[in-house]
Length: 158
Image (cartoon, rainbow, N blue to C red; front, side, top):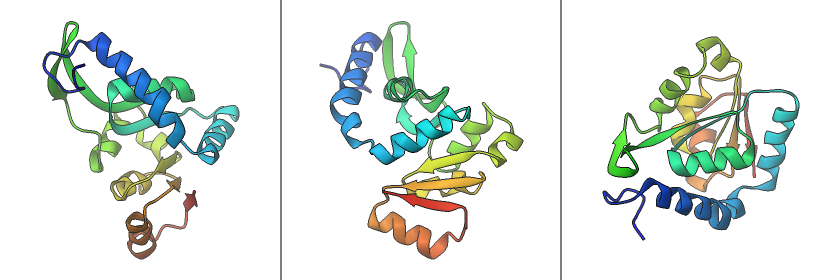
């Protein structure tokens, strides 16, 4: 079976792998508290966007299964029905997350947004939104935010 970034990978096969990866791996890693919080915002009518450095074929599967309105992710380049093995555009990581999000929503909307993140690199996105949730952080990530990131709108969810 070809890898996600293999030059000979057929897009259809990788989409199948992405569904399998979501069902068998990611569903076990998404914490119930996070799903609950996401559903609360969705029920209130908030537009929800998944912004991730994960490759698009996996991110789309996550977005579809969790009910996100839009998915913004790192895109795999494809020619016809095959992947080229290259990334199309920028990797959606660090400062690029904020830039990628600004391509699909206005700066004003971003200022009133709520973000969930789990990594040190999400600090740029957190600085751009009204409220931020740090999700199941590693010890290193937690120390970083406690020591260097002084923003009173940051909540931690385990």
